[in-house]
Length: 298
Image (cartoon, rainbow, N blue to C red):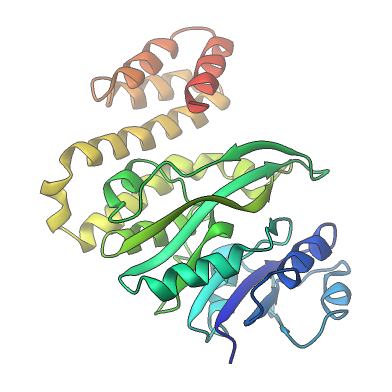
């Protein structure tokens, strides 16, 4: 049995699929298998997968199912010690697995590790690097406020891993935060992933769920770990405020200004930036968009 199971979920993913798979075959670490889940594709996804050897195990769902359910379907076939994820339009750097396996092998008290990413466009041109800001260890309070973990960068101990299937946008964040509530996480400052930003991606399609699912995840983790509530009161306030900002962002995108104002009014005194957004919600939307963009780039 391979030491690392790599879960890939694909649906009509022929465009970038060979680049993604080739980046796994180019790894300097070779003790891996790919568990490929075809979510009832109608393009040439299967034909492309079939051109590779038996290091790829191909499975097909009976019908097209949501991403969280598709990941859980695939997790049933992942039996290795470690688990990694790669979407079909992204790529790994050659030393990704070698470096991360070494980290977890040598640090048994850490449950998972993750790294930075380089964002690329649809042509593969790199345009932004994202280096993790957190430090290795118990990152729960930082992660509670804002997620910086890109799923493609993760290597995780394969122990009873499942995804919430009712989350359309952030089943991965829900998993990371539940892990971080109980375990230490190793943060690698290197860039090991090229993450492709494409138009009409799942992220852009689910903006209506961003804030809602942030709140669901906070509630979920705190209900399971009530001892953390008194310990991280300030971070919890900031986390809910950020969820409110995400809701307001969606409302403003739909020209629902009054809903945005109502949402932001709940958190206007939590942090100066939320008071600023509350004031901006009364002003022309172009100003809201510009300042929010500038603040999110920091």
